Image (spheres, rainbow, N blue to C red):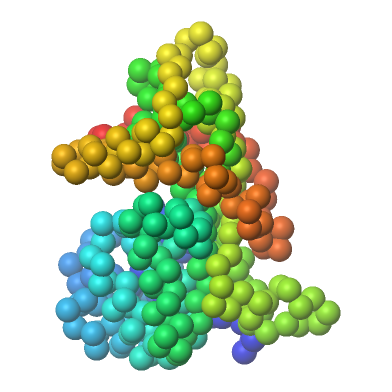
Length: 322
């Protein structure tokens, strides 16, 4: 039974989305949480069984506040192209509804790295959201950094450099810069495990509680790997040899600059190349396992099989329209 020292009621924005659905499924699987999906009035998202639904109008702030009344925690997951003010409206509504905990729309590489945030403009919204929660002073945040999603990113040639249809891969620099990256199932497990911690310490273990992470950033991952590690996995999964693939190299910084130029000329894949290539700069900005450390062990997260994740990415690449 969930007591007063635990989170029970969790509201999720984006419960039917790429990462949100894994969070919802993992939360329900614990048996400790009731989950409410916060959706637009006109949304037709398919939601897992057992999820309550609250319809909202983002043009009517009171509808957001009403939907969040009585919730212990709010999880926000939104796409990079979501309206800039959407998250701020949710954060304000959470404060007005006295929601104690907010997991903002983080789910990204290390947005505490100032150089990375400066160079990748969409990341600038992330510290702004944390600052707003702190300024309002009604909720506490835990920002969960996951790196880029592995099965999503490996499937897009402009992202991690793999073109499965043509058996071609572009290595950034020498392909040996390590980055931390997470699968969707691991992100779901991380969120469920985090929100299942006691709020205040219990017994002798002072670290396993939400208070320890109040108003801070935490880091989880599935793998910390470089492109050559990914390529080795791809070769195993596809049962091919290196000679079957066209391997080229491109300077990461040149790819970043070229991505900006392409984006300015209306090429949306230029945006992807710019954003992803920046974490492959040789400054460890993408390797937060090294620079920050993760809470994987504290949350009891499993060690995953990269080949299984690679299989999922290859299958996904066949369904993409890029």
